[in-house]
Length: 321
Image (cartoon, rainbow, N blue to C red; front, top):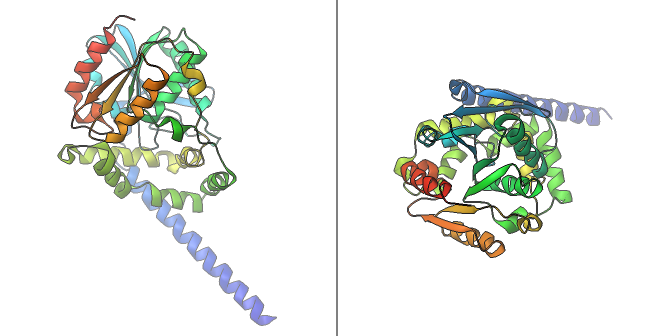
């Protein structure tokens, strides 16, 4: 009996020590990632949305263009910093931080695809106030397409930069993936797992493997900004990360593609052969989609070759509907 109690006490002490160590590591991660406050340097404005404050920036005047960053906890409006100023010479440019990203709030809720469809629709109606062209990066493209299908009065032309695979996007949550969500939502253990999965080293690896064709163009500043974005506000981005990994942010958008009559363009980074194949998936559903390949770029052509990207965008945004 005494041996049983002794072993239980040892186990409790060991568990407490492990959790305490995880907590300290989590605090150190947050401090290191956010100490420089790089994201706040832009002094964004805020849209008081019903599910949380949404950070955004407006530059220039003219026909509105909304820039939507890639759907990733490391991403923010900083992704568009290389093209904003130039595009603002001829347009009113709105850059937005999606809920759970950048300087926007990170509420504890279940993040879904339709949540972001609502966000895009409400932002255009209440902040921009008129029909707008949209440039969306990566997986965020699905929100734009669904918002457009739901309300044809808010979006004009759509430019998608390396949109997500339609098959991957259609995968639904499972019991196993739901368990992952609950695990990542736990205060200490969930935060620790997130920190091990999303940190400066993993961001650096992703930049080298997927984001840049010419790795010499990678800037330490961009890696540190992504690191800060992923750990801002006490690492509450893990709630969005958990929903992404458990497929709650997925949606089968095939049903809505047939409803869209807008001019749609895809800018594809040809340095990653998969990007061209994915672009063809969309073109198979909507034959009128025009695909523009950018050579010697991968997932971030608007960052890696900003001048060439701007030149393409100006051509596309002056085409007649």
